[in-house]
Image (cartoon, rainbow, N blue to C red):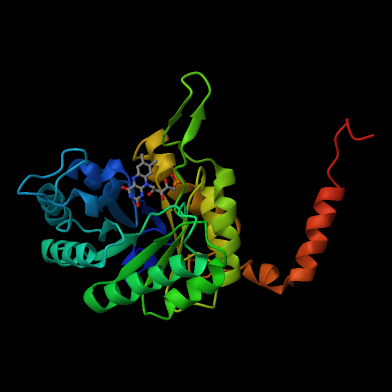
Length: 315
Ligand SMILES: Cc1cc2nc3c(=O)[nH]c(=O)nc-3n(C[C@H](O)[C@H](O)[C@H](O)COP(=O)(O)O)c2cc1C
């Protein structure tokens, strides 16, 4: 029997690789989802169904990528493939989320990922209010969703570790850490604000890696790294820090779906070189070092990094 060294676990599913396709438009076509399976992805999170795209007065809203019926049709087709298909539901209204959850489960989604994307721009809302809302969504959806479910968190939280543990205690199966912020840019020519999606770079992985290493071993559910995977090295950094799997979008948008093969090959090469037999044995290997740091040591390291930085302009 040939054993796949990359086999792993994701929200309770056995998967072929810890590399999971993140929600993005690449999954809008069934042929692309087939290509993701072919290239060796562990699972696919479909692009989001937005609560705003629900049908108003009998008419689907045309500003969203697909209407609800087309989304459900895609879920139905994709769930026949041999790879876990995770529907992504985007919104914060509990009525809408519960209706959407029922619909995607009926269409055959193997699991659901909730993305309550929100920017804390309301000056009158406290951090506690925002975090309570996330816990309420997780609790309600856990009661409604009979399939494995994950929640995708924004990086703008005052205490991500504490919130992660509270969310974990609601019984959800995984936390995706972290979504990316899409902030408006100031265009100094047109003197207007513009919004563009920028693809990520490896530096964007630092925040997720940091929290994976602090949370490893403290949660029942999975830690799912998200943001900034450019090469297999970042996948390994997430896994060694404590993530159970890693989601990727930008690197596939930049290099094509087949880039999953390159990432998987990079993982295998590293495992061979380091004589590792399987993925579970490397998850969290380097988390202890991080967890041993106290807040005081952290400040010492912080001061040292600033003091040791050199430039010819520092006299
Ligand atoms: C073009 C594009 C579209 C995206 N659409 C969604 C989406 O529909 N729902 C969602 O939860 N995240 C969406 N994302 C965010 C990705 O799922 C992912 O969290 C983010 O890009 C960070 O991963 P990366 O660094 O590998 O790109 C999108 C990202 C990109 C670049």
